[in-house]
Image (cartoon, rainbow, N blue to C red; front, top):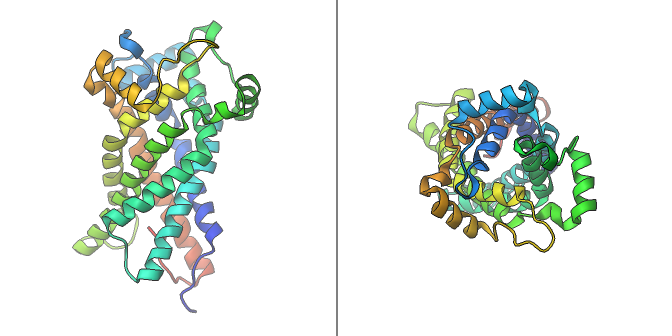
Length: 309
């Protein structure tokens, strides 16, 4: 049986499924990361000393299940954002390899990652905004909580109460973050995987995927956390009619954070963010590789590359 190309929709389907599977595992860490990023706004007293303090206080005040608040929005985010970004990236990567008959270099991989991130984040912005609000809701005074019951309740209420375009609030910083994340994550994974194979110490398998994705997660965390903090604060802010918004844009958030909270506040929640992003990266890529491997084995006669990454 000759080497055949997987249908494009398979790349998107596997991308979404791998992201959803990883999210179901790391959702508590995503919630903790969000809570830490919005604590101490404007120089106020920080609610949490560190990641473990945050976990303890959330469980004590709201119960263990509070760590999974916003799971429906997180799953919808993966079904839109991750499905699109991984589908676009693998499609671009496959097209490049077929046309140029070689793997893309670092800069080319980064450009593909940025393109995939921008497209995916635009599609997934409503889910991202709802996820931020649902995970942050528990820290607000009872009278100020939005009390969304699930993703669809939040979607309809935001559209009705704030207008449909409010679902794309923070779209620019979200796209900026996604471009940074995907340029770092997808490019570093592809390059690390290629380097490890060429070193002779690794062959195709879970060991290779795990090592490459751990390296990718660390690089991505350091590069994207400042932009992620800006995105989180913009999407979580409340803007009453006639009032000036607390933040104008990404640069304004970063400047105010540095001025009022110090430069290292741009990496606030690093441990929670890496503890979330690292395993999420590992699980996403491992699941993606395994799904592609099973598809290749059962539908392509064992032919073709595993994932196109």
